[in-house]
Length: 154
Image 1 (cartoon, helix red, strand yellow):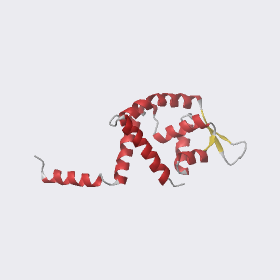
Image 2 (cartoon, rainbow, N blue to C red):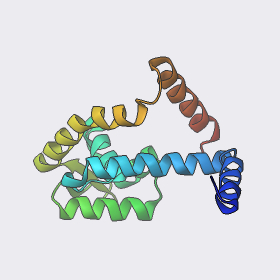
Image 3 (tube, rainbow, N blue to C red):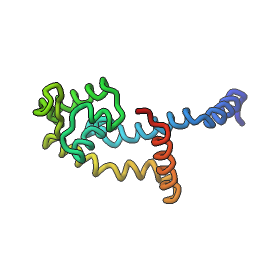
Image 4 (cartoon, rainbow, N blue to C red):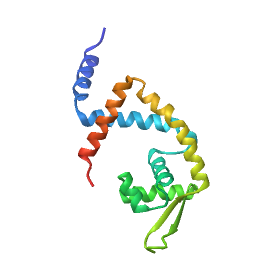
């Protein structure tokens, strides 16, 4: 039998789980935790993965473009890029076109780490989405994309 405190806590949780912000924060915590566990050996965060991914699929980019594409603030982008440069996963060089800008490129090590990370991605995705039927997965992704597009601030 549950005590009064447990019953009260259960009711409070039921109420708070109706708040969109709370649910999104919990979903973010859960996905971040799954990512952290899966990529621990690669010492890769979701943001670092994003930078490596964009450089692989977009080619050379300046730091401002990376920030814009991933919707990151400049200081976060700077810290992430600095770390990736120190780890020799990304190379930073002065732009030949605009000396005020730095161009970023993947190094061979960066490409290798991203390749390993991409091999882990399906298992992480599956772990997070196994709760849903294939139709529900599609719908969840569709609704999240719609939400992000509709509420994005530039």
